[in-house]
Image 1 (cartoon, one colour):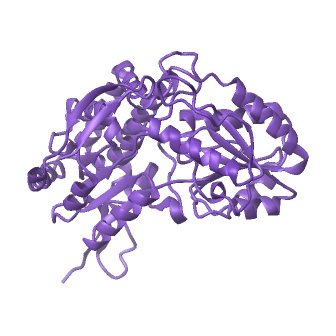
Image 2: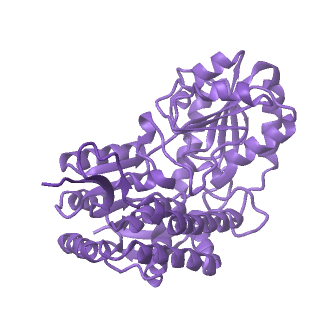
Image 3: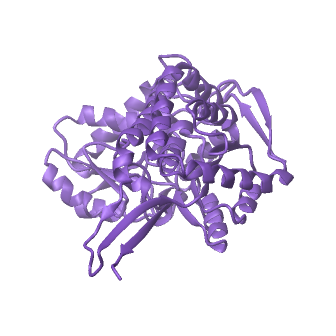
Length: 458
């Protein structure tokens, strides 16, 4: 039995411990989800949508409590925590308002029959394995479309997010989602593998590391279960030209330092044309040095702690390794003295393909800046990683930027913005960043039985 522990990364103190799932509870858990499915699938789409609308309302009503929980357990600055709560509410509301129309039966060309139609039906109980970096948002983009479809969910959150995962379950149940339709579990990775082998379970969605994704995908494939994976990223931010370099640098710094740099789709590699490079580096260093690092509950804090001391130390070691291998560290990179998991934001340049930092993801407040001489070189560098989540191109000439963006081997491209996520837009990557899509109508297309029905006269 695993134990879920909530340790405040600001103070380093353990605040709560939650007992894990016992191994002998797994068969009953799968059966509960299956029983819940038989009832939830027969609930009308209208009623399911109404439950999601109530969920959105409750997220807004309980916003202060929900935001404070993730500030304590994973260190998200208060303003960002409030924004995440609102984004989760927006996702539930989007599916409540738009989802029913997207699930309507589609009429096809009869092609020789009296009628040919396609129905969009649920497939059964699903497992969600979610990460700590965006506790509410990650769950919402998986749970909202699948609950609307009529699937049921067993949700395993990250072990440090025990408090917020319980709050999410409480909100959904208070919104009239049945307890067997959404089940929060404090399970281990081995227990998730055992659950995936149960015949009642029909699919799994994981957001997390490459290692975790590979393990879950292997287990799902072994049991012929559908999987969706959203894994890591090393997103490029390509700067071709700008009418306002200071503003562009501010945007770049804010995007990289959001959530203390702990976002899969954060711009981790800044690829800058040579005529702007020196000024960009100088400006980015200035922005990183000015960023207020501190208690995430303080409204003035811009960069909170990393999720844990071990996560902080991993990032610090990656930065130190890059320097030992020949990279130039312009600022930051060292842990702050005292309690908590704080790290001074770092800017690195001079990274070459032989260095570990060139190909790995640095999941923290560290920016890598590269100098290139042309858009063609920028594209080659941007695509020279195994990841493929998203990327952005910045230019006053949007047509030129679009040409470059269209050459990026990623799941999402942006022009003069980075990492925008909205309920109606698809989210997902390619290559080692995973497969499948969430949000919008695409989020309703993964764990669905797209069933054909043809009718012919005798």
